[in-house]
Image 1 (cartoon, rainbow, N blue to C red):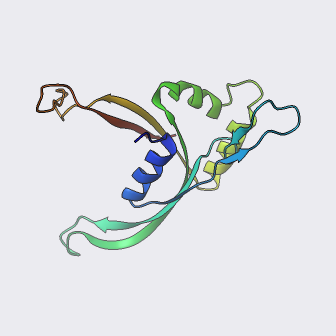
Image 2: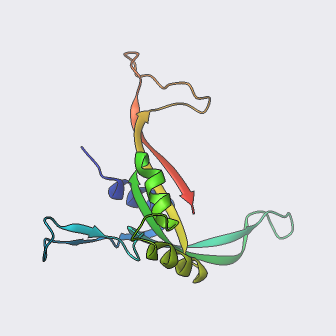
Length: 152
């Protein structure tokens, strides 16, 4: 079954403890547009995610893995095919003419305590921890979705 970057990112975030939902909007054909368009939150966010993380003490006194407090995180996640990584970085940095407001919005989001996470997805040959191709029983290379995830 074909999956989209949004679906894969939502699944990944939920599996790693985030509460996540899509905030990207679809605006149908209007006015002089020839086709509809997708609109991201603040120009860069496809997914809104939040989580609460226990801060763990690694000392022997108190006992190891004792939760000493909590930290809350909120993030906007931009998800896309990995081949478009540089395009999205340039957009977020305000280097795309006519979209300089996105960099200003990103700066305000960060100053308010928000995180910006990029998810780039690629369908590639799977490799083990030593970089060796994983092969099926028939000897063919196995393929799967791989995620490049970075906090920007």
